[in-house]
Length: 100
Image 1 (spheres, rainbow, N blue to C red):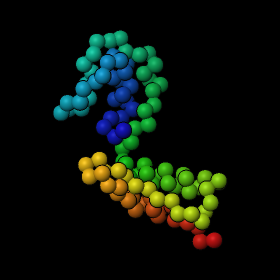
Image 2 (image 1 turned 90 degrees about the vertical axis):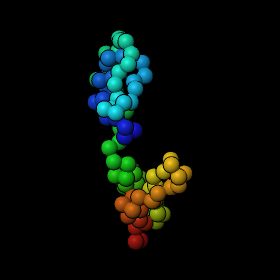
Image 3 (image 1 turned 45 degrees about the horizontal axis):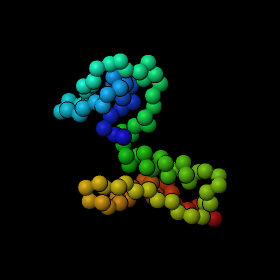
Image 4 (image 1 turned 90 degrees about the horizontal axis):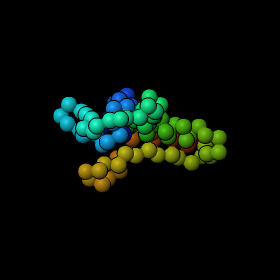
C-alpha cells in the first residue's frame, strides 16, 4: 500500500477501471475509459511509512479499553525478500505493559 497514494488511485479510477501499469515514472493508465464517478470517494488506506504505521497501530491497540495493560504488544514488518519479521522499535516502545 505504499507504492501509490490515494490521490493517484483516485485519478486512475476516474480515468479507467482497467488495471494500471507501473513504469519508471510511477503508475499510468493503460485502459480506455470510462472510469468511475465514485473515484473521488475511494479511500485505499495507503501508507507512506510502514514503520510509523505499525507504531501507530500498536499505540491504538495499547490504548483500547478492553486490552489489558499488563500484556506487552509488539509490532513487526514482514520482509518479503527474506521471509523474516523485522521488529519496529517504536512499536515495541508503544506497546510496553503498564507498570501496575
